[in-house]
Length: 144
Image: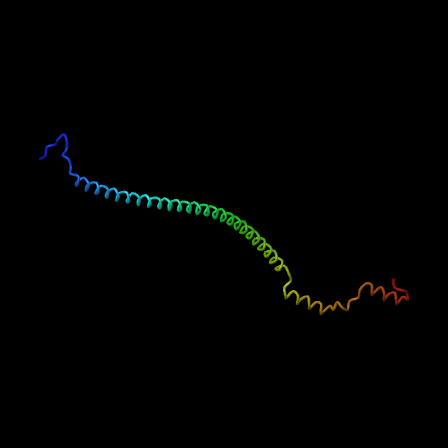
């Protein structure tokens, strides 16, 4: 084993130069690696910033779309309610018409009336004005 001394042994200048050149190479490689890592970090930060901006824009668009859809849904709901009301009104009117049609005369009733008209022949009936005229002519007076 080597005993430690108070003053280390001197290193030869050739060894010292080799060590400095090895340290310089190591420092150069570390420097390049650090610079490369820093450049990659900047690129990643820019990408993150871009993604964050896009995310915010997307969120705003989604909020606006949600508001528009909500408005459209309300409008459609109101339209549906109006349509239901109108359909109910039409149903009520159809019921009324149906009830009125039930109260109307049917074909058989018309045939019965037609037979009575053929039997009575109302076209041969005389009006009051015609009778008054005939009576006046028979009495020799002028009709009023």
